[in-house]
Amino acid sequence: MKTTVLKVASICFVMIINLGFANNPIDSEKSKKQTIKVALLLDTSNSMDGLINQAKAQLWEIVNELSYAKYGMKKPDLKIALYEYGNSKLSSKEGYIRQVLQFSNDLDEISEKLFSLTTNGGSEFCGQVIQTSLNELDWGSNENDLRLIFIAGNEPFTQGKIHYKDAISNAKEKDVVINTIFCGNYNQGISGMWKNGAITGGGEYMTINHNKKIVHVITPYDDEIIILNKQLNKTYIHYGRIGASKYKSQAKQDYNAETLDEVVVVKRAVSKSSRLYNNASWDLVDADKKRKIDYKKLNKKNLPKYLQQKTIKEIQTYVAEQAIKRKEIQQKINQLNKKRRAFIAKKQQESTKKNELESVMIKAIKKQALKKNYSW
Image (tube, rainbow, N blue to C red):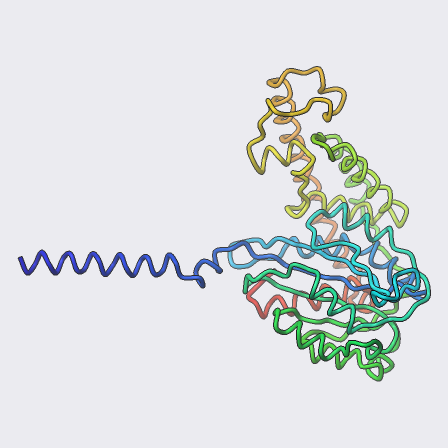
């Protein structure tokens, strides 16, 4: 009898312990998907055309670098938000600040919003735009997320009714790191308190030559990647209410990249072949891969014309065929990109890019990511 009681007690003890671990919020938190959240706060006053152009041209290289990030065995998601400030076309009541994009993983939409930015004179209130982004954005509560603000501009950091130190104190409560990018002379940025803002915010103080002409390294693999990108586009099958417009937007962002430089098209093609480029909300191939699609409920009027007269089975077969083609094309692009990166590493010295937006941002992100156990 005594032995039986002891056995029952032991079983109950083990069950209690297991239930405790199952309900442990720390363990639950660790099991969540990690996300790198980056908020870009860009000065769009008169003198900032060069900054905006660098952001447009170098978005894809930044995305590509972040696609290689790891958290243990997991690969984190990426979300980017965008604010403009210091533009006189914006409301003075709002401090000449506008949220251009809430946190999004839609890379085409991020590109579209960047290309929509224009510059105009205005007052630049750094503390207020930081506080606005803290108030409006969903920063989440996962302790393993990497939360970063990059604020770029060229006027004193101290302007506006909200002091930058108060805003940064609030950022710390949300575990958000503040990185400052001064567009101009290093010492001028220090006197303008940009460095102090970064130190206070636990981030990096960086300076860039925002008017510097970007020099892209051309490689022997670029032409083939561009050809493959056109083939890749043909594997997308729009569906749903927003499908057709999103499909057009994808083509538009290819065109926008091309207006900057062919090499930007190459970088975008690499991004489109990465795990971070997903269009399940409007593309049948990605949607089918992410979740089960009820093909019986598809509104054929929202499909491409060449599929509207097909049977459900024929549509499913076509989607499966395009999925195979896309995977093959993306693998080819990634293989070529490995060779491309090796070629660039030999040709390009670090000094040639040290004061460009892409270079300083990637360096800062990697440094801060290491503190949270992210790796590359």
